[in-house]
Image (cartoon, rainbow, N blue to C red):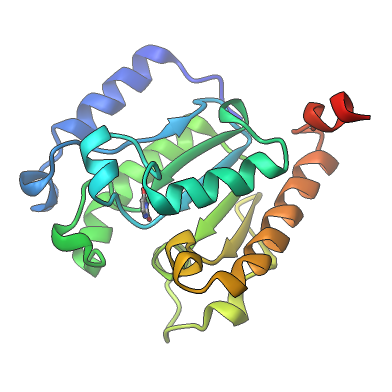
Length: 202
Ligand code: URA
């Protein structure tokens, strides 16, 4: 967990806003960089901004964001505990999936963001995030890759469903709940999160 130098962060934000590494910036209203904390132990990574995110300049603020937010809050997590962002920082037209080239073009900025924030645990939401991280030779089934930690360079990475998928398939919400619980338990075990909301109700 880094102690982000705010000047460095400002420079990073400027770099994101002036990015021309792919054409998505041209069609977007805002560059969507993050919401939450700059010094969070947990980084939550989705695919790319949708319409609400593009308009507000923040990730996961639309319907799928609400689902994600409710889930995180049910474990007592709030803005200081996570850093939420996306694989791509600009909205693809008609919310299409970002192309491999667009993902590649955005990767350098995500790597920089990752280095500045310094999370210890990552939650990847959906197959685009999973594929961008692990580059599997064939398209995996989410059911096969979710729910287990993979360690990469000392960071623990958990993959789960994308909340937009759960809006269409509510019966699968329980799986994402289980995956987030594993993440929260791991943060507690590592001494990186203390659920004060539970104490208040005791
Ligand atoms: N879907 C995503 O993957 N990210 C967002 O920020 C919003 C919807």
